[in-house]
Image (cartoon, rainbow, N blue to C red):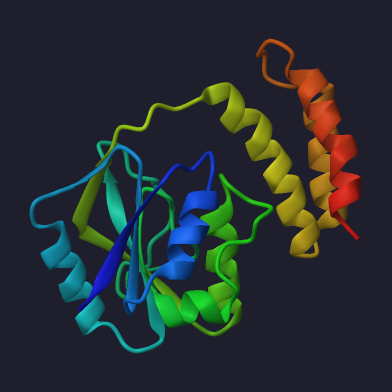
Length: 196
């Protein structure tokens, strides 16, 4: 199995987009900045990928010390979306669905996952392949832009009324970060320029 390792920051996916476009391998291994693969992670990952059927095109490594905690099918290990810590993706499927949408950074992998699933592909967790991520979290940025990207994701996936209502509720009672309401309000106005 040949893959290209692409390091990225979940705060700015432009570099990952560019690296993925220039890759020539069959697989892309995205590893978040500060990510450290366990010594046996690649062996486990290759075992999962070689045992999976052809319709499974994305494999998520388990993040330690804190895993995502979301549902994984206990028999097939299938998941609804891949997390950003470290993910192996078949390049042909990645390109088929258009790669990363430039509107997203924090939720780029969620959007990519949903497009892969709509195209008929499956995603799988690889619990024996682990990655430790030490990229420091910017809680204020993640809160503000996470809310904004959820709004855009809602519009993209036909949940615009619900996404708009949730964002408006957040505007009424945001978490207490300095200047957060002003920043959210600015982004709310800007979103009208991005959506049809």
